[in-house]
Length: 608
Image (cartoon, rainbow, N blue to C red; front, side, top):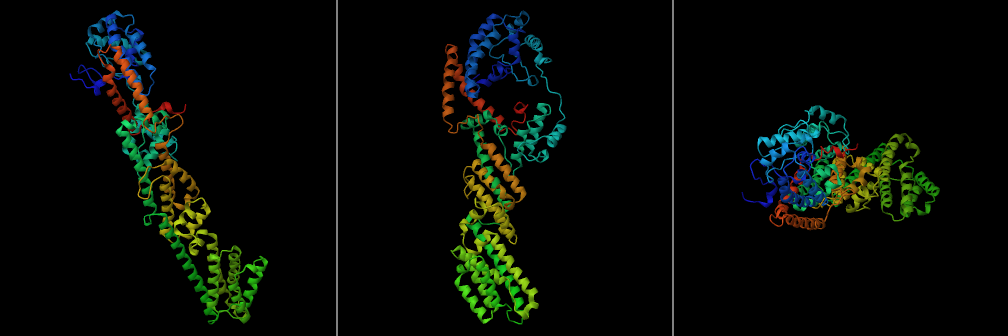
């Protein structure tokens, strides 16, 4: 048989020899039985195994502990346990049978960590198997094991357990228990398998995290460490990634799926939005506000025109009363000296003549509105508003009193528009061109100065324009994407910290920016992103992928030399096994970490 160092631990001398698993060998119930005296081997065989097998195994175990992170101090303990077990006072009944059939390179039983998973495979004659069976039956922990058969848990009503799980268990970060039938088939099967293995229970927090990840528009898969949030597992998975293509592929896939989820939400929120950056979003919103203002102004003008036509073509406003009302209001607020000189002079002349045409009235309103938007002096802007309010009161001439209903209608329309602009800073900024498009979104939607009530008012004022309403949501999602470190082309490494900070800042306003479903999915996305990147207290993730690897290499090298020396250099066990052991263990850990529903059966991690 040719020797393959990469597969040393799986190499079999005979076709029936089981694989060597150093993690389980010394903990196997069969070894315990030897130690307790249920059976043993002759002293000659014991010495052979002690010198040729036990010491190298201890050395291998030391390398194994470094590779798997289980502690180098176990090597010495394993030497003692192995020697004690194999040099115990012989039991004649079992020693004779084992001595005639024993092969130290092939008699390596398969083990398990609990009785329910125990399988036993003994190479040798029926006599040896019978002796081993006799010894194992003496162990209470595996009572009932016959001839290598295994105890299995009693059958579980999986459907009943899952129904109870779905209806009653808390799912951790998930807002409510997810329905199993809407989860991906492989996760459903993983839940069923875990329930069967544990006898009817799974870790609800782990299930909740897996379910959250699977519920996103672009379903995601968590590793075992991410699903359990166990600092040890997270550290091991991240530290293995340099030598585990599967783990690297999963981490890259998760990064892409986080980006894809934001894009999927953006596509659903803004199916009619084609603006691609904050400047274009600002243009869309400003244009929508200006369209709204133009429509409101046209409506107000129509009402005043109806009043003029009812008065026989003359505009029935008492110019003298209008001037007196405006002057009185300005004096009361100590603003008369701050009033814009041009409009006040024009109003004074019309009061002296006792006449004001509709065209003059409209022009004066327009001029006052412009001053309100552009004047640099705050008092002047406010005084212009006082004059305009006096104009909206429309004091009528005596003979036009019968036209009061039409005048009230026109006045109410004009006042409503004025109040709408005053109540919405974004509206006022849009129609006055006081905030440019490139700063409009940040100023009124996503920035710190944008308030919850202000955003709610924006949404209400923009209801007439579906694209503008969609743009509110799209601009928000784009802001979150950029906060996560993803550019407008969709490139970059997703930062859960940046995303969640931005999401928390937008949370009070989210109800006015996106629909409830999207709001919930954004919260879920933030949680899942945190699971994939979290390094909880107690973790020891080697983010540079150098220091930990170098330490492990050095420690394993020392133990490798020690294992070689224990056999006098006859068989370089340490050298032969090290590479295969490392590859085997990393692949084993990776397969476990990437399995669907990984961690569901970790009941020991649940609160007692």
